[in-house]
Image (cartoon, rainbow, N blue to C red; front, side):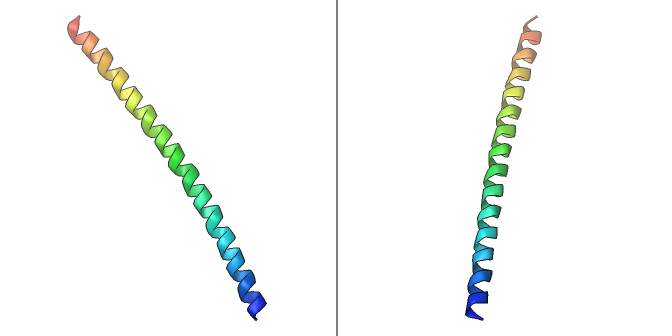
Amino acid sequence: MIVGLIDHADRLGKSAQAGQQALSEQIEEVAQLQQWAVNAALELQKRADAAARS
C-alpha cells in the first residue's frame, strides 16, 4: 500500500511538472502575441499620424 501511494504521488508530481511546463509555454506565447499587438498598434498610430499630416 505504501509503495502504491508513493507511486501515485510520483505520478502526480510528474503531472504537475508537465502542467507547469505547458503553462509556462502558454504564458510565453501570450507575451509574444501581446508584443505583436503593441507593435501593430504603434504602426497604425504612425500611419494615422502621417495621414493626418497629409
